[in-house]
Each structure stands twice: as C-alpha cells, then as structure tokens.
Length: 320
Image 1 (tube, rainbow, N blue to C red):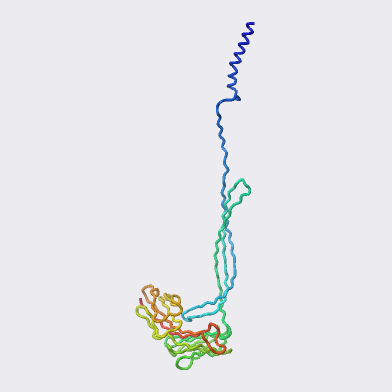
Image 2 (cartoon, one colour; image 1 turned 90 degrees about the vertical axis):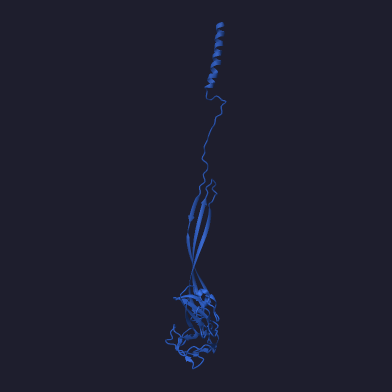
C-alpha cells in the first residue's frame, strides 16, 4: 500500500516538473514580447509626357482694291491718276501644340493642350493706271540751258491718236507748235529750243483734237534770279509759284528733298536745315520754282487730273 502511494506521488512530481519545460519550447505558445513587422510598398509614380506638334498651313487670299495716290517728282511736281491694283496676299500660319499628360488610375483623365499661332503676310500688288476718257493732257514748260523744254503727254479717249494741234502760248513772240515725232504710246509732243524762259511772263497750253479742244488757264512764270548764300543758306528767288521745291545732292545721293521734309510748296527766302549738308564736301542744290494749274476751258475741255505748269530751274554748287 505504501509502495502504491509513493509511486503516485513520484508521478505527480514528474508531471509538474516537465510540463513547464514543454510549454517554454512550444513555438505556438503565447509570449509577452512585442514583434515588429516592416512592409515596403512602391508608391504610385507620376509620369509627365510632353509632345510637340508643329504643323504648317499656308493660305493664299486675293484682294482687290482701288486707290487714288498723289505722286510728286522733280520733273512732274504733281502727277495724280486713279489706279486699280490687284494684291495677292500670302498668309503663312505656324501652329505649335504642347501636350502635358499626367497618368492616373482614373480612365477619365485627358491631357491639356496649348496652341500658339504666328502669322506672316506678304503682299505683292500689281497696279495698272486708269486713264480717263476725253482729252487727257499733262504738260509743262521749264528752263533748259539757254532755251526752254516743253512737253505734252496727250491722250484722246485713252489713245495717242497723232496729228493733234498742240500749241504753247508764250509771253512774247509767236506761239510754239509742238511736234509728236512717232506718236508712239511712250512718246508725247515736245519742243526744245529758244526763247529763254521768262519769269513773270504768261504761259498757257492749248490743244485741238478729233473730239474738241482744251485750253489751260494762264500761269505766270515763277523764279528769276535764283541764288544761294555761299554758306549754303538761305536760298532765294524773285517770283513765287504754288509748288516751289528744292533738292540737295552729293555724289549722286539726295541728302534733302523739301517735298518730303517740308511740304509741297516752299517760299523764298528758304532757310536750309542742317540735315541738308550732313558732312563736309561738295553739294549741288537744285531749285525749282513752279506754278501749276489744273484748270482748262474749251469744248469738251480737259479730263480730270490734266495739268499745265511753268517752272524756272537752276542748279547751284556749294562746298561745305
């Protein structure tokens, strides 16, 4: 009996001793320690896409316009005529497109596009002069050396018919009849020779054509005693015109033109601006006192833009 009790007691002690050791070595057993876990996940990346598109577009437009210019020159102070011109306009258009695309997980996202445009216009006008119907005459008389130069650009109903009677009435002496030469489209009526131009003398032009006559108003010859101070200014003449002007040249280059810098008519005495003589050297001053009329009588008279003028002229050399 005592042996049985001793065996049972020994078995209990063995169980109490081995059970804690078995629990300590069991990996599934709970523990009081804290475990740390680290997880790395790649973030969503943002991608920027840039696209540049440069298309080229060329358009051609044709515009039709009519203008009436006034053109001034040394030989013909006022030369007005109606011009009809056809202009061809070429537009070159360059479009630059920049696209910025930011991808997302949303299928509804769209890129943003920005356009800039540049235009270049080139005009190539072609002008043709329109001559009026009727008697169209542009004419004049002016000093030339020891005599005069006379011209008459005469058209009848837009053609040069030839055989017309063109006469310059002068202050003293018989009227001068102008000749036509070949009477080609590029050649008008003209005369060169005596007498000398007479300032303050009365001049007029008359023509007789197949459709009638045209007679200019009388104009008084301007100019006379044209001179310039040795210093280069002022410039003087005796009798005023209504379209007086002058030009200064040096070595074939125009340094001053009063019609551009001052206006269509200057008066004596005229003070030359400093810009006329930009540096030391030799200059020639061309002085043109001009008297001009657009008034004609006769039947049917002269067409619009017809004129007649009388002009004195003298070149004067200056050294600065």
